[in-house]
Length: 90
Image 1 (cartoon, one colour):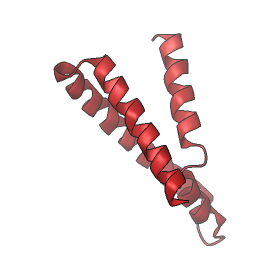
Image 2 (cartoon, rainbow, N blue to C red):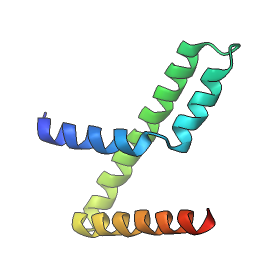
Image 3 (tube, rainbow, N blue to C red):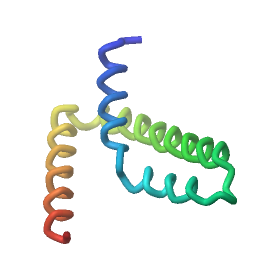
Image 4 (cartoon, one colour):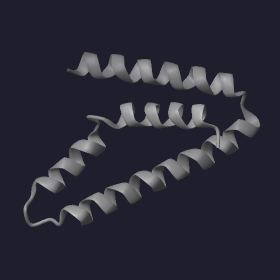
């Protein structure tokens, strides 16, 4: 395992997930005393792991047909566009 890659992926995903809709939804479920906290944690963890697995598979498939640098640029433009759109709607 490449520790630098591990740290880069971990940091990127961790920062991206902090304060997003997924975390807010998880907080909402956990705030209800009737919901078991471990159930909420395990369900949210499994959902995030499954979503990450789909991302890895999709990225591996796309990487066979599209240059990784082009994918990086597409992702960057998409994130900027989403940010601008969110800012305009606010």
